[in-house]
Length: 565
Image 1 (cartoon, one colour):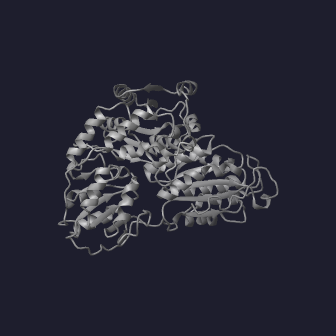
Image 2: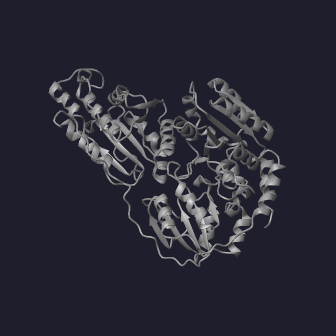
Image 3: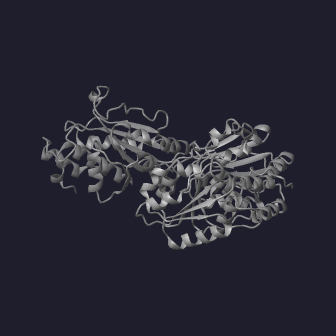
């Protein structure tokens, strides 16, 4: 029951209804930013015992913090902002959520439409500000006692229940004044109606019917597993891989790369030129592609060059893309449902496997990495080996995620590691904030590994770290600029290269001292091992700067490319 005596005006009544509707739909985690126009929303959130909320001054940081929470839980984080340009700062995170179908709700306060385009302060055109990057948009009218609270609730509930793909949605609510505790003419009878609101059933997304295609079992078959949201159950996917006895290629985004699946059946990433050559000379006839897009662009180049390979693409509600070519067959169903049915219907068993012996070349690469200078390959290999079971691994883009995707070992790791990334639009922003949002929603330690440029691109998010006690290790691999471009043909363009590699001579130690955050710099593997081990024991926020020499790093990559099967 709500104490209506604490609701002085129509704005506070409506926002109370709004928050109750969200809570009834199991949406109760809010990421707010300060402002006056959104004060009625903030008041309703703080007054509700069902709400959990964090506040931050930078809307872009808060949006990625909400994204990290949503990636971990599968539940929408709700962003709350004032009117004007505040909401525009959400756009990069909204795009990433749209591209990867991560649930996110933008709840924006607004000026009434009669004030827009008249020069009223903090008034902009908020309609359609996110363009095509929304799954739905609800543009409300200002609160009015002419509309019954139940009608307002039903309007919100219908919008939340609409059958649509997961992803970001936007609710825009304009407010007339008063925005504070000023009492208006809203009657006690009207206010009391919020204590008799009725909720309707939510849409059931689990009843999905699909058929398995008829495919010749004699075709040489390879299983490829792309990105899978970590909140999805992967038990059936592992079971399918094990019962199929087929070779498989596990993308880093699958979250299965370091699992108990027999390492002898796992092909290393397409980032290894030897693997590309192997499959070009011994082509599969059928690829069963489970999940989303792979990190390695070489996989898609391979498919474009060999269009005769048939592809069965299995995704969920159309959310997974396949940029190389149109798949031969496509099943829009939850991955777990497909795998379970494929096993029960004997769809996957007795398919013609073909084996590859990669153990020798993988062992040789392990030896090179173990005896190399401090570099991205040595850092990623050692972190994988040191990660505790159940940890969250958040990977930055560019070299960071490719280094972990290229990880190969002669032994099964057997670890349940959850892997997170921003591969929807593959931007470099927001990683400090996203890892924080993930760490806040998990009891397991979170390890963020990214480059110095990605770290610098999200410095504002460090303001949210102060005084938080979370098991979060933020590892910054500092090679003094954007190293990924040195692996590409653009390296020959010596005139342009300095403009895209963003070289710098910044020292991070004083930054962390100013922020009061725990920090250590390391320059070799043994010091990294020591710092990482100590950070895991502390169960607190720690920053580790791993300083590598760019030339030595490139030399390691060059040596790894010279090996042959």
